[in-house]
Length: 116
Image 1 (cartoon, rainbow, N blue to C red):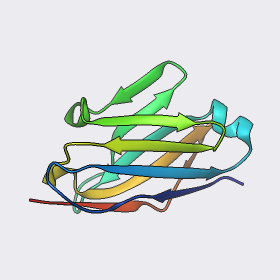
Image 2: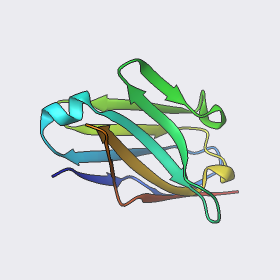
Image 3: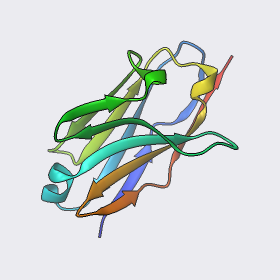
């Protein structure tokens, strides 16, 4: 059983920073070999990829390059998303995803609101 729990969302002003965390309750092996990603979904819009870590490295959406950084701590089974220089258009519910053995696992989401 794999469970993902996001935290760290909240209300922040334009230009501010937040760090999201996603704790994975699963075996360490599953966490280490899986693809980890952060997605977001704004009201009325489809869920979109923000950043991910694969065996080949990291990938970012063009809209967040240079502002967001994804990282993982295998010892803590946790993936992070450091978000800097936040903009109102970053407002969304952010979801953590773990892809492993052809199965996707999702967290419940954490809301980020950036005020102008």
